Amino acid sequence: MIDARDFSPDGSHAGTENDPWPGQAIVDALKSLPQPGGGTVRVANGIWLFDKAHTINGVNDFVLQGESHSAELRFVGGEGGGQLWFGSDQGGTAGFTNGIFENLLINANGLDKNDPRSPSALRLSTGRSSEFRNNKMLGHSNGSIPAMFWEGGQYVKIHHNHFDGRQPEDGGGTGGGGDSVCQVQSGPMGADGHVGRDFEISDNTFLGAMPVVIGVDKIKVLRNHCESHYGFLAIAACGTWNTRCTDTIIDSNTVSAEGANGVMISGISNDPGGMSIIDGFQITNNTLIGTFASICCQGWLNDDQWNDGVTLVGSEKYNVLIKGNKLHSAWGASDINVRGGDGKVDGVLITENTLTNDAGKPNTLTTDDHSYNVQCYGNNGLDDTTEPEPIPPEPEPPMKNTVTITVTADPPGSVNFVTDPAMSRSATPKGKPPKPPQPPAQVPTVTIAVDVEPPDSSNIVFAGSVTRRE
Image (cartoon, rainbow, N blue to C red; front, top):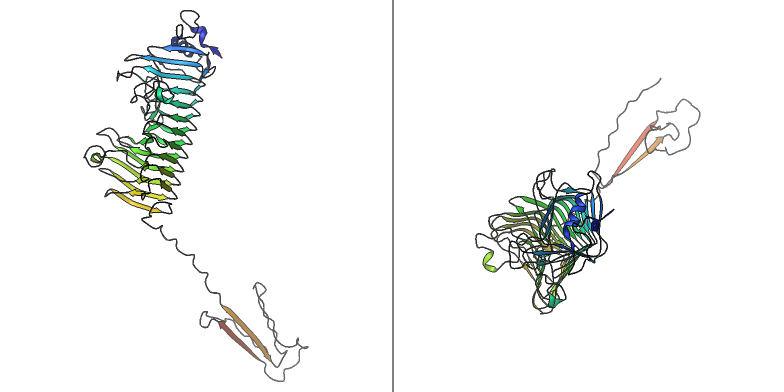
């Protein structure tokens, strides 16, 4: 483990507002790690100032570890302002591997909200087998710019963090809210042939902020708590630009604005000209509480955008499962929206959801002419529109035939009736056991009677031969 303070280019600092540590020290400490091998860079409590952009390439197997959440990486400025960019080469084999960020306070409040070219504080390109865990992040002051921008990679886990985009009047910093804290999206093509896959965003707290995922295969958004008391709140997912992405799972999250504003879990469209296709879109076991609560396949669009010939063209969702969610609205109906608009929503199962509201209005399922193969059944508070496909009954077992064979020897004891030992059943002749051989007084007669129940249900065939001995 190395101490980032030892790499300060201009000596010791107090780590205060007036005398912060230079961010350059953290950059130089990371670049000093042996490769291969790596190691841990320890960041002491105090303020570490980033007022210009830094790139870190070729550094793998590292842990960037704060002493506590009082180890603050503070980013300031407009265009060319503070940024840490890992894996900035963006080539197929660039990026970084086995990177861990933990126990840090990353503060993007000081980036210029009036400069649209102001960078994200933390930009992570093509990170593989990496984690962002137990950190606290304050959002960019411009709500349209994410404080953390993770693009591409594989086997990435973002978990147990605290993302805060609240305004000062809501108890937060100067963050702009919205998606100003965490955005995960596809990136440059990786060595595995994918632009991003196998991500998990789990067990995080989002205050006044929305997790946004764009075009990542096999991404899971699990057990996050999203809360806002002053603005619209959502978990949003978009497909890859002009490419189909698969298996977006949004499960067991809470999205709550209570009586302050609307909440939603939704697919969203790409920018005009780009398709947004998700195949395997699962929204399950989530809780939504707001003035209006909705689950939507295509987006929270104005009515004139659904069929404007631009916004949703090429936006398609396939194999959608909406199951086990709880939606509660304070001001109106709760809604499940599977409209396709100018795109398409095809193959939807809506089941086991509970929709309630305080307005006494009927909750709604919204479809249109571009909603295909929608099944809706087994919900509470929602009129089911279809019944489940009937399950064919189990076929009855075939009727068993009963065959009774009665063998009578006349005179009694004159004939031995022998069966094959391999048979599962044997027949026992009626009458007394045979006497010692004696010349028969008359030719013996054997009568075999066969009764079949039910009648005519079986054919009984006897085959054999008789050898007569003189």
